[in-house]
Length: 252
Ligand SMILES: [Zn+2]
Image 1 (cartoon, protein in one colour):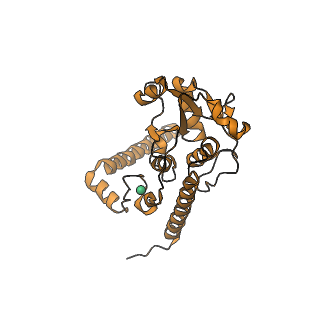
Image 2 (image 1 turned 60 degrees about the horizontal axis):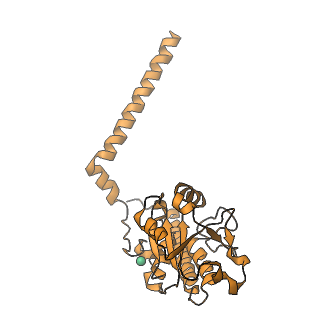
Image 3 (image 1 turned 45 degrees about the vertical axis):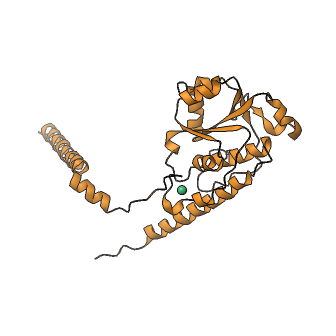
């Protein structure tokens, strides 16, 4: 008897769970209800250039410049729409840079063409075990590290530390290239995004430091000014939302 009732209760519970699951599915697939759920939330207008919310758009503050060498930003798809991402702002600032989105670049036509070009000397900015540390080379010798008759192309990976490692591991064409790195001069100012390790910096900070080492004649500090403005704006936006979320709800 006891055994039967406990089994019966089990079936009842399972049935109730199925009913709840069915109702959730109905709610998610019912266009009218979905619409009402959607319309109750404010729609975020995005800037088509930087893909950030218009309230945090900083396109007006972008100061464009060109570099002698080619910077290619390889962005993980997860970073593309992140409000706190910095690769797109870097790309908008450096006119002759490229921004390519993907995870595995083995068969990526643009990446393959850049690497296959005999006039290019391609390297990856990544702090691997065999990476050459530019900070250790005297300033007047840094450019002599690369063949002068070829154009230097630097691939910069934009992703979390874990995803950047995976992107490189999965892209054999990139993994075969020489790696360069630098010793960060100071800790990241990226206070809105926690860095996994003390020496990790955001993509825009990494490019700023790279330019300082390889091409000090360009106005690379403009990147840092833009980055600081972006961080401040995000902090203000976050604080404003926190205040709104903690405000008491007014009942009708
Ligand atoms: Zn914008």
